[in-house]
Image (cartoon, rainbow, N blue to C red; front, side):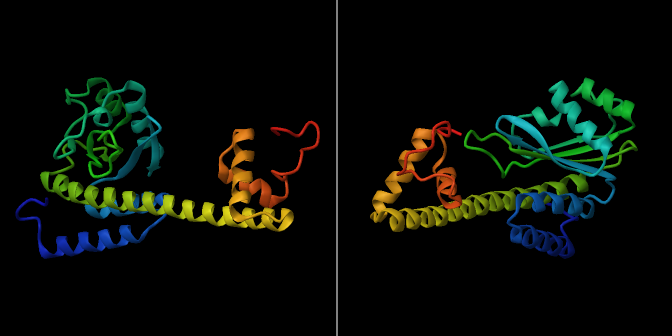
Length: 245
């Protein structure tokens, strides 16, 4: 929560507005872009920002404001050292006042200091986790001067990260729901094509689609696209040489 003395009414109103804006976004890509824009209002002393997300067991850069912080994030992945590799913590904040003297991650910080980055504030997206309770995201802000970020910056960034994690979870759920709805619609279209073409029942048409998908080792969603596009008919023999194409 915001530290006592910094949690003014204006702060509460700002974060309420941020929460509402991020919550209204349903596209994960646009959500990340907006996060990178808003973070400078939350931590105004920052001059650069990046965000990393865990996908399929690896960390990927979702947004970066400049090439310098792209390199900072890449170094964490290459060295396997830095806030990125820390387990979930409460609070999940890591403040580096001076990379030239920081001892927790000596190799990573030394290379950042050589790049001219002296201050780092990294925040775990602890409200955005997978089934194994692993942290799925990390937002970091940077500055070239030492001792840039304050405890108040840490508190505000933690509140911001909570809203970001919630928004990303919402966007992820909505994206999956929309994909599911589109798939169901396409299945219905493909069923209708086969029902009309072969005088089938709805269940028989769906069985034909599933059988085609299994025989060709493809998802049902891809099989229905083949039927709709006219590329193949699950109930007709395929021309020689086209099987599995």
